[in-house]
Image (cartoon, rainbow, N blue to C red; front, side, top):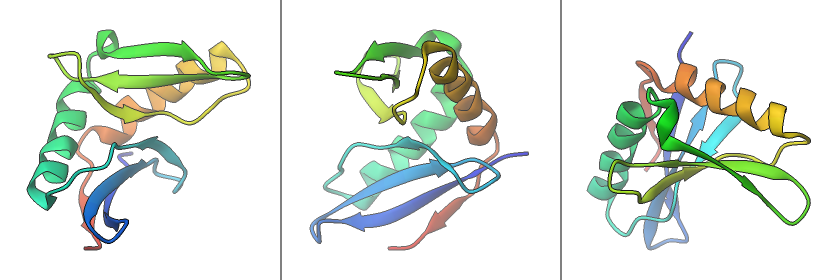
Length: 109
């Protein structure tokens, strides 16, 4: 089952989105966008790139692993949550791929 993208205003002068899994849990958070159209393009980029496991990069934070999702040009388009283990982070990547496929956008702007 697909999740949904939630598009919101960010800081009063920009936009950001999250991807929620079917259970409502946030599995990916976008960067800050200055224009609404750019944020919507970011959502489309997540839909396209999340299907390719090669677009995910596992990273190590100061204490916990997390992942990023990159576009074909290498630009980071979303950040995963911090996880208790590398295996949990990899499961999070799979959750993003499942949630993004066919996910509608809940535009709260």
